[in-house]
Figure 1 (spheres, rainbow, N blue to C red):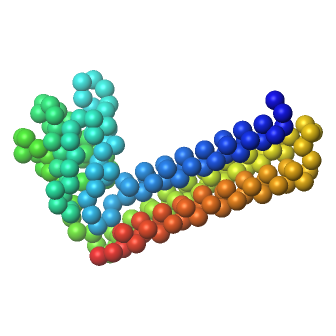
Figure 2 (cartoon, helix red, strand yellow; figure 1 turned 90 degrees about the vertical axis):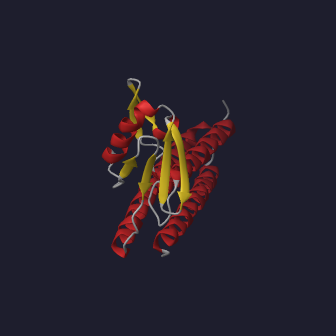
Figure 3 (cartoon, rainbow, N blue to C red; figure 1 turned 60 degrees about the horizontal axis):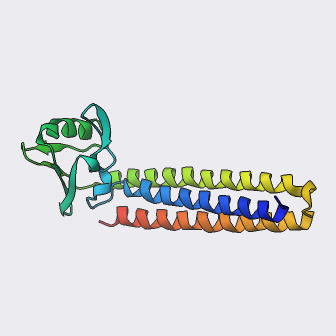
Length: 189
């Protein structure tokens, strides 16, 4: 394989992995509670049904009929208690109410203290994802530097390393923008 093809593969892989990190951050932030209810708060909770663990969104319909209420219409009513137990054990401070037909989760009003805690969670998740992007940058730069003896000049390698840095900067800026939007959503009363 030629050096230029290898460079293109390295850059393409780098871009793809960084984009996946941004998309994962979007998913992670959707699970952080803001003032409004959203299906993302519960859809990935694992429920033990039929001898295996399944995400909640594969066990029933999740709806948001009001700004601070989530309803879960479990398809097999025999699994209502398993779903209720899984939500309670999820560590998300949710209190499900099972009426024998549907599960309702009423989200309490968030205090300013709780909102500030949620902002800290957003910052932590964002920083974790930024670290992942920086690690991807490091890997790409290491791979590019290994090409020095394979027909690529130092100037060409420096150019490609600069390109990786631009990619990194763009993805980190996107993450900062996502975090800022989520923080605003959380702090808006």
